[in-house]
Length: 548
Image (cartoon, rainbow, N blue to C red; front, side, top):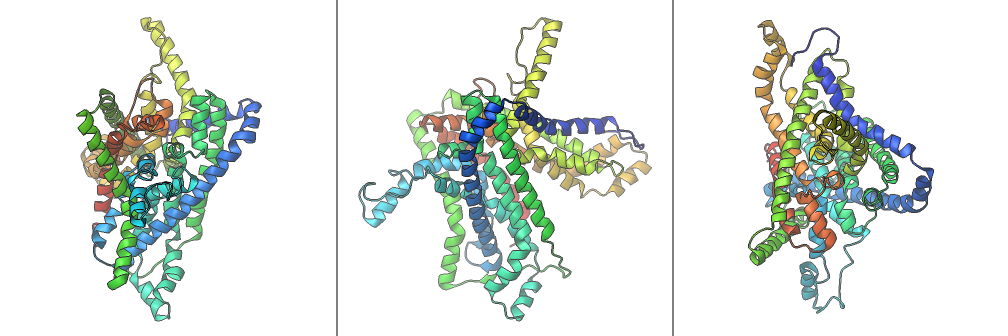
């Protein structure tokens, strides 16, 4: 990687610019498809589809925001301000629901909360009822059920960001508030909570973006969201223009969420001139200790332990009956691993390229390149797939004509007919993770090392190979882990861009649940959850290792 000292764009800067353009291109394509579509589609959508889907999406977002805000903030404060038995374990256990994607949570709770399922059966036994006709809980296939399930799966986004904020706040401020006559509740409400609002906003916005990206849980639970409407318009009705037009409404919502999140951070700025001293946890005893333990562990039990135990039990049952997994599930597992490895490799390479280019102090487009390159993570997978379809088809057409001209190959789809289309979508979707992790690694490498290497006669290539790369290995490993796990469980883009007869673990689970068979869905779900535990362990070790 050799960069010149003049102001001319170099080869590596041009390549980084092309990568960033590939992130923006699907959005531009989406706008063109939507705006040039037939107006009849607009009329039908506005008349019959958008009102219901938009209202369901809005209600779902509001409900999830309230639930993740309450659970995440409450759990963060409980484990920061109070000491009780199992607190040290609970601090990282509260992250475990991150390993369970929303569609797997819904898959598990559809059986767990069935009128004849174990949870309702246990409640009836405790209350003395003998059948569902005498007592049954509300149907999980409902809007409250969807809010409940997504809230359980997504609250760790708020918990993680808010707890980091609580850990960085100075205990002197709380003690000053107490000397002024504030009770602990008043100090939390008037001092701690306002200072944590930016972190709460960040966590809620991430949870809402994941809610918008969801397609499996919403469809399993019978909620017609904008994402489900996009999938229905494209796959069921073969109407790409209508799908693109629905996606435009989703882009407006995504833009609004990001704008509100950034606005909240701009308006809430606090400076602490004192040396931070962590808040001293208050030891609880008696009934308060019991209540704290119950409240602390309830999200973990309902958000991870129940679904995980269900998947383990169902997997054991299936293996006892059949003895081995089917060839189809084994093929889906291999497909998933190969796809995730390839996508991770290219995503890390592209992220490293952008992070290295924008590190150069004379490069004038650093900020805009990072922001545009990270845009893909904010785009729901279904929206990204709609925007990618037309460019990929055009490229496929060019490749097919060239191969036919040069080698007389028959016309075929080289990108859409292989995993290349999915790899492109994954790279765009998860490039933000790669850039962010590698940029964080680069902040620990001072530019003085580059200058010292230059004075010793090293080129930029040699500096990168001998200094940057060895020091970036931890950041590259963390980025690769996060991208790999996200690629393993990605569903929305995979459903829309996968080749014919190509299944991954997520699409296999989706097909099982859609058919209502559930035979090997638990095995696929358990494999995804086991892989999803890896970043949870990583986060627990890196975020909370000094907080005990």
